[in-house]
Picture 1 (cartoon, rainbow, N blue to C red):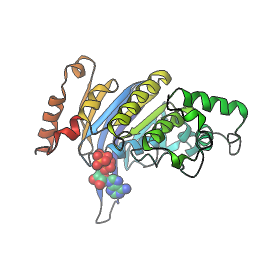
Picture 2 (cartoon, rainbow, N blue to C red):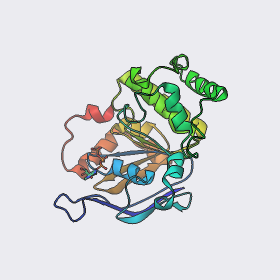
Picture 3 (cartoon, rainbow, N blue to C red):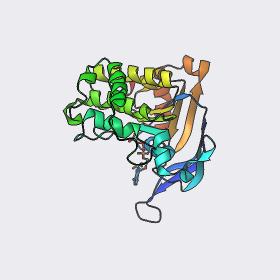
Length: 264
Ligand SMILES: Nc1ncnc2c1ncn2[C@@H]1O[C@H](COP(=O)(O)OP(=O)(O)OP(=O)(O)O)[C@@H](O)[C@H]1O
């Protein structure tokens, strides 16, 4: 269970640039649930993910994963438990390292230094098998530098990396937004597969209303640092993209200029 209670995050406190990104946010996510998160620009979506990852500390409130206060979990253990995939395909892996070196680093998360880095033959087999499952032919390119891959290939590998250390929480921050439509669809399918197989508790931030309703078990909408919509089950099933757009318009108090961005 991820339990977020009264979470407040203020950036640049006491400075002229002070910004309240989250203001008293409450959210409880049972194990193995897949939650899609939407909200307008600046609603606090990325901040919520960063806080769950332990990268941003609460100004007030608390975040627990499996009953443990995230702020008190040592960074190495946190990194093994909570995996993140970012919008920028370059952000999740090191371009100057080979595919297998990146995978070895990911598999070593949470281990004592040095222990996990050895590229043993059996480990190569595991990497090759995991990449073969993607169906992109990357299993034959283990020694290629990551920088040679396309954005979509890198995001697919980032998803594999996210699961190698046995993370039980996966945070996806618009991880398909920078991809062309075909590759975005591929990565979304892969996301469904990975989350389904590994049963990882997942939060996926998206700007696409369609994805917010189609992906996962529950849709949460943020606005000005708070949860303003939280639907699952039949209620969610009955919701149409148009309903979400209407809600969006209402809370924003203005028209959305380009619905295609949100529907796509
Ligand atoms: N490091 C930071 N320092 C100062 N302000 C920040 C920082 N990060 C985010 N903010 C501000 O906090 C608010 C919430 O930002 P956040 O990135 O969490 O929103 P978001 O919902 O992910 O937005 P977007 O959809 O545009 O990515 C915004 O007003 C943003 O400008």
